[in-house]
Image 1 (tube, rainbow, N blue to C red):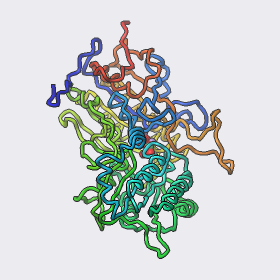
Image 2 (image 1 turned 30 degrees about the vertical axis):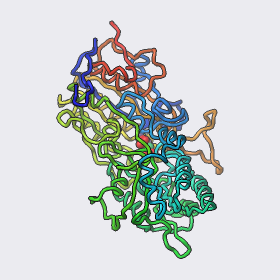
Image 3 (image 1 turned 90 degrees about the vertical axis):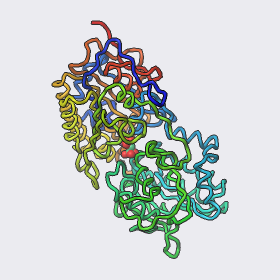
Length: 559
Ligand SMILES: O=C(O)[C@H](O)COP(=O)(O)O
Ligand SMILES: [Mn+2]
Ligand SMILES: [Mn+2]
């Protein structure tokens, strides 16, 4: 029993041995879908992953990775890395940010909480700034929630509001930001009719402005800071719709990569720099791509870039983004309380763990896996290795990314005999899938498959077990489809490329020389999802899972 009163000791599994090394591979954005020319996994040569299917149904199956299976509001919500890795690591389904924010808005509790009271103190004299992703993707944010927040804040006395938008095109179709901007403008106009001075103040494409993650490239956050806080950007416009349309045409940027811009008044002055006394809310509910900005806004000691001017603000996140760092300290909605994750249990039960990915996905197999918590549970039992990602490029120009490097680190960790769990995320199919470049995504899928082979070979040598799965779909479908599954065409007759994730299930396969002969997937969990994986892995480590975990996918039959 630990000091927290939690009994961390896991009971022995009645049939499965301990001490086998498990190679636990998450292919990011690797779903299962019908085979056609837009299914890059099908088009790519992926002999290793293909061969696993032959193990069905005993050793290969599909699991749900979207919607309510991962704690999202509806079955129309595609999966994503945060909720996927949370479910994989925590073994239970938690109501996730999107759902918690919906509930807090519906009940009005958002406006009664500590976080809102804190920012509200600025309303009488100062400006409320809202910063975040303008999208209905439901991955990092949702525009309908932002509109309700705007309405609620104005009803609560906000007299001057400035919105700093980040355009998406990654969780939604490229080009859709124009429509979102029109919807937002419409609501801001309604507020102005009511006497609230409400306008968009700045913007930029999410991948080029603000929404970097895991400290891959601070210049992205700096570009946002300059526009949002300092009111400085290379482009100036009178309104946001014009800004987006113009920048999409020239310099021909897509939504994800629009350059930063500020909105200026008739005299050319930026309408919304952030100044002393203002309130700021970052309205994304998802953590990874808000943490860096949250640090810049909140930390007095900060040396990642020159902030030039650091306004004394009242800052709240939509959620608290990092439970360990308590960042930000003020927030509007309580984050999901993802406790007692499998990683924490396993360290208490003698399972030594190695986790690795490249920077852009490093936090997925550490931070998200451990319930949005940074750092080690026990640094004597765990080693996390981050391979630096390339920065400043779109990954279609480098579709192999660091797959080989990740796999080789995993191989070495497996062969070292120092770990019982070696966990990796292979980013290729997701990161390249998001660029919408089909040819490059095919190369990416092949590269991921080759990396899997390197890890499998090590597992073979070490007499271990492999578990390979994915966090959600992406590369298996690169086109927007109608209800009957036919590709949709835009008004120029071109197919509409799908840069986002999908609603598809993902594969899970188990095997390797260390897998006890009688282990197979149960048949009585047809709707099993990612949250069932943690108990499965605990079993394969020789333990029974805690009783409130989603049930294990495997059973052991006597041969
Ligand atoms: O943040 C991103 O890159 C996308 O919005 C979602 O992708 P991920 O959930 O795979 O990280
Ligand atoms: Mn992902
Ligand atoms: Mn993704």
